[in-house]
Amino acid sequence: MRFFSRRYRCIAFNARVIPRPMCPQIRKLLAGAWRDDIIAILDHSGSTGPLVGLSMGGFATLHVGLAHPSELARS
Image 1 (cartoon, rainbow, N blue to C red):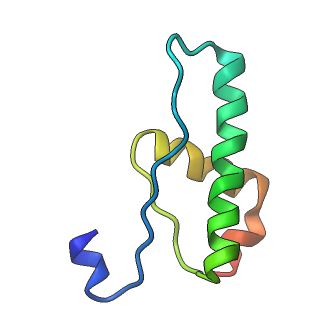
Image 2: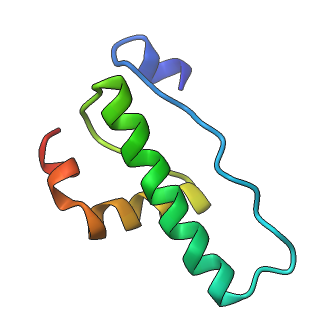
Image 3: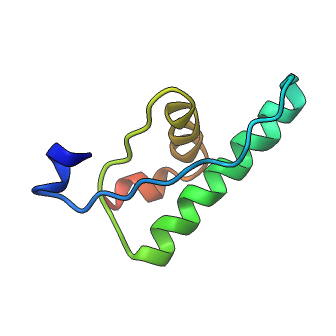
């Protein structure tokens, strides 16, 4: 973040809580919630650009790309 924020606007957020144990049904619900949260943040901030996610964030950004390819196309 520090490196990229010198040149780009970077937005970081904490994802919703991950319950333990996490069964596949809960994982699917959380993926949708995280996806919707990311879209809401982009819409609210008016930001465009590439999405980067690490670990579960990568899982969430993948779901953004699958469900809303137009959000990625606007970058």
